[in-house]
Length: 132
Image (tube, rainbow, N blue to C red):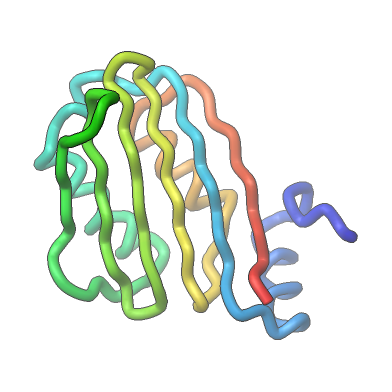
């Protein structure tokens, strides 16, 4: 199996089309984010809107941003016409876990860099999965 993570965005999107993939998932882990940004509900809503604009996805409904659970931090979901964006923010570790799933292709590396910059993270890891 080919490692698509080492491919550039153009090659990944070309492979997506050639293989007739059903969808693409990007799992973006951010570490050492700005605590002020990941703890700001309004900023997280802004992130969902701007991420959709960045990857050219049309939002469906309102962005949900909720703080709940045992680990302090917000969770976000945004339906898009081609699937779903979700994110979980962990206050204590200053981390963000962002999933972008769509049946329309988008540039995964650029998307991950956009997220890293948006939350002023020091470190990032990315996993890319083509769904069939």
